Image (cartoon, rainbow, N blue to C red; front, side, top):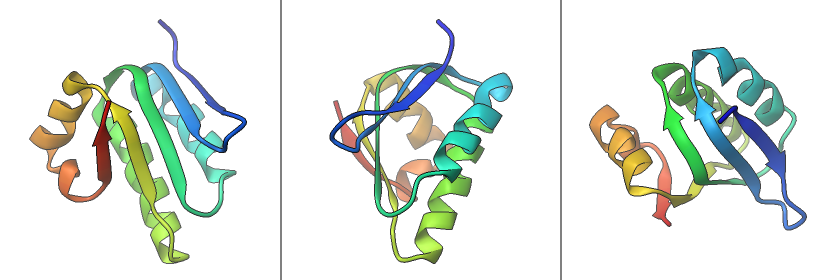
Amino acid sequence: MKFEIEAAEDGLIIAKGRLDAAQAGKAELFLAGCEGGLSLDLSGLEYISSAGLGALLKTHKRLMASGHSLRLVKVTNHINDIFKYSGFDKLFTIESG
């Protein structure tokens, strides 16, 4: 499955597919246009690489500089394990799906 990212009507950002090195720029570009506190629905995310983690970290740091944060919601067990192994579970607010 290719990577898709979009804003839902309720303001939730939805990411689906594979967030790898080839798609990290697409994610960064989309997230760079988002302001305020963001919630990112990862229920449809199948895979995330180190480049994908970097895109999320870059967004989180930018939002923190303005007093906001990036919250990860509906995170599957597989993706949550990746956050734990990388130590990113200590950087983000993560809500399992």
